[in-house]
Structures are given as structure tokens and as C-alpha cells.
Image 1: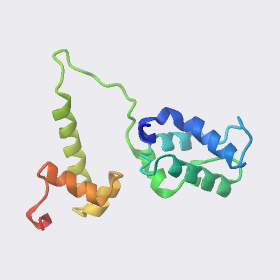
Image 2: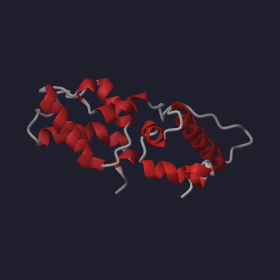
Image 3: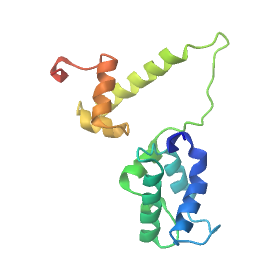
Image 4: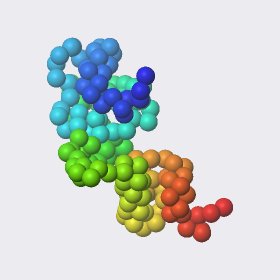
Length: 151
């Protein structure tokens, strides 16, 4: 089964199921605001469905009747600021080499995060929603690490 981050269309149904399962709502009661749903659909879910279950349960216990953006954990709310993955994409008539284009985009985000965090890698990793270890790996992969980073 693919991870939840690859099945974002399942999130609304899972939220309703999980809330009903825990007896926190009755089925079909519109338990989430559109802002909170958008935020959850942009979140990368490193913990998969269990993490979603914890978020739903926590949010409904705190807010009593509806999941709101303010009721979501801070690390999840940060995902609302990410760009929309469903925006239209243009492909030139001559085509595009996807892998190099994706690598270039990833490099740009890594460098921009480093710039925005004043070179603090832990903060840069948080801005990109990834672990510090993954961030360091990507820097090394694209040869973006400085000599000071090397062991």
C-alpha cells in the first residue's frame, strides 16, 4: 500500500472514519474546516495513517466539534504554506528532461532554505519539512556541502 502522502485524495474519508471510530463525531457531520483540510492534504505525513489518527483525535478533543487550522499541531500548520502541488504545469513542445529538472528544483529549494535560515542546516531542514539527516544527505548528493560540513 502506498504511503498516505501519495494518497492525499483519501485524507477526507480517513478523517471522517477515524473521528467516527473514536466516537468523537457522528458520520457526515462536516468535522473539518476547508483551511484545516487543505493543510492536512499538503502535509507529508512521515508517520502515515497513525499520525493522521493522532492528529484527528487530538484536534477533536481540543476543539470539541470541528477540526480547525488553529487546532492542528504547529508542525502540521506549517505545511499550509507549501506550494500547491495541483497547480497547472506547462511542458514545452520539444519536451523536457524530467530528472534533471527535478534535481535543479530540489537544489534551488535546498539553497533557498539555507539562505533563509542563515546557513543553519537544522532550521533549513525544518523549513523543507525533512529530517536533518535527509537534508545533509541531499546537500552531499548535489555537492552543495561546504568543507566545514565534511567529517
